[in-house]
Every structure is written in C-alpha cells, then in structure tokens.
Image (cartoon, rainbow, N blue to C red; front, side, top):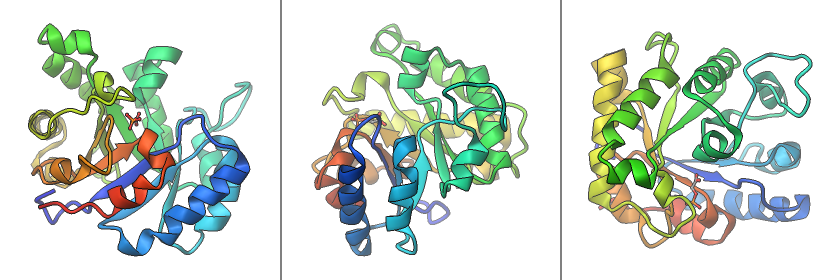
Length: 254
Ligand code: PGA
C-alpha cells in the first residue's frame, strides 16, 4: 500500500454465517474497534442481516456491503436481490463475482460485467473478485485467467464510471484453506492486475484503483501482505467472524 492515492480497505465477508443476534454482536465488536483501524473498514453481510447491522453501524464509519446483487433493477427473479435494493437497505458496497459465486453458482465474466454496471448505477462501491484455481496456477494459466477476468468483468465502462471500483485478487486455492499466498506471490499478482487495469482503462485509473488481497488472511499474516506496494487492503472471510478481525483492521504495514 505504498501509494498515498489509495486508501487501504479491510473488508469482512461474512458469507452465509451467523444468526441475527450473532450479527449484532459482531457488528458491535467491529464498530467498537474502528477507532484503531488503519484505513477504511467494511463488512459484507448476509442479505437478512443488512438492516440490523446497518442500524448498529450508523454513524460509526464502518461501511456496509452486500455479498452479491442481480443486474436487473426489479422483476420476476425469485430469490435475487437488486443493487438498488441493497442501496435502499443501507449498503454502500457490494462484492461481485466472488469465486464461490463463479464456482458453485455458475457466474461468468459476463454476469460480473452486468452486475458491475448495476452496482455503479446505484452508487454502490463494487468489489470485483478475480483469481485463479490451483490447477490454473499449476499449469501456468494464472496470468491468462486474470487477464480474461479483468477484461471481461470491467469491459465497456469509462475510467470515470469505474472511479469507485475496487478489485480483489483472491486465488481460489487460498480461500478458506489456510494456504495464504506469500506476500511475494500476492505482490506479483497485484502488479500484474494493475498492469491489466492500465492496459484497459489507462494509467491514472490503474494508479488509483485499490486492489485487495483475499484468501486466508489472518491477524498473523496481514502486516506482511499489507507491506507490499500493490496490496491496498484485504477481503477477509473466516477471520472476519472472529475477534482477530480487529487486529486485521489495525494492520501495520511496515
Ligand atoms: P477466507 O475467505 O479469508 O476465509 O479465505 C476469503 C474470501 O472468500 O473472501
């Protein structure tokens, strides 16, 4: 996070976890610890918890996000939630194209692109996730996968429209596995992603775009990841459900 152009962001992804009562407790814990955060903080919570968590976060500085949205504004899409509904419920952010959505629910770069458009239109900060599988890494396809996901996911938008967009590099092999990318691996991938952003959307957009790392981030490894020049924050799954998240929020980038 060497660049002063990019304010660090630590975002928790609660995934499909917690009751409402547990969500309230965790939101209180996170907002209570916000004073010692080293940058911006957000929690991306299950749809059912958005309003209760929003009440607790109001006025605290911790931002609220959803974990997915549909690209249409409204209509006959049983089970889906629109970007406008997230906004209406109090969200400022939304995760788009998480690898679990891609892998388990068939999301493609085209879906990601449409969801991104919906999020931007509603004034939500999108966190667009990209990342290679273990097989892709082992067969030297990492750069091709990242290039395709960035080009397909972000295509058709002017840099000015994308000004709020955040990218998250989440190698699939590191998510929920306890196998974090090494700081050097993360830096290499982030630098590559930034070069792709530059190719598609220009140098000033690339220089200002925050790229988060996600995949088994913990209180123990956050500092060394955040010390990398192109790592501008973290998208945190498992550890965002625990007290450790406070330490992650208060990372110290050497
Ligand atoms: P993890 O998840 O921190 O549990 O690996 C990260 C993510 O999926 O965003």
